[in-house]
Image: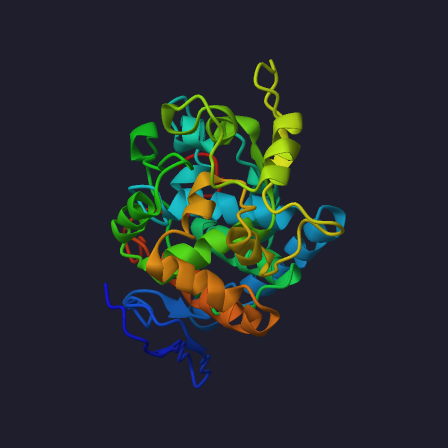
Length: 338
């Protein structure tokens, strides 16, 4: 990994639109993977449903006005889809006893009903045209924008997969080291800046106590708490997640006063002050490059850098193993094959 300082330019050149920013001094890809088969404004330019993105944006706004947590739900849902072995193919949306949504790592996923409702609207206006996979990508972008993220361009033209399997889910434990986390992201054709940026989505949302109890009571098998965790946060979380609790309550990923579903750079400040809730988040403090990224994004002056990096990393994640052309299908119902 390069250690010398270098400037990273984020470039999203789409029909004359450029998105640029000087960013971190780490070795990382500085462009999208070649989108190859996906097209910007695919539905507007190539289909009988030119207003598809407008319909989706309208529905997402209605959801968000009633429930601000929809942003965190969609972000987690999209990550679960794109970061599975199958890539961004809508497999997370399929029902079935052996479906990805039933994998232990995906327990607690939400947002399925909202995607169903958007699909119903689109099938009413232009049946058989807009894929569930594109709906999920576009709806996540729109929900994130309402919470304060940039409204980044989403290439479209994805088609939906024909099958789903629990075995496709290889999401690691949230207690892994930053090295293990990076190896996982690299296996998905993403880099260290993508990892540190995409984990920044943890600036909002919640996690179940079961995912952090090892940090609270038995870190690395020591039968003691994680020594890197801020002591006041440790006490707070131990109260909310009792050691012998029979329930599995949730805690905020980035505890703060006010709106817990706002897209901010507070996540990185929490890392620097040892107040990250998930183990993998706190681990970003211990890698040279990941620490550098946290230091870049944590100050108020670094928030725009984070937003621009988030735009590129979300676009890169959305390009993983997409189905286009004659592959897959356009589902009429996101929960089952045609």
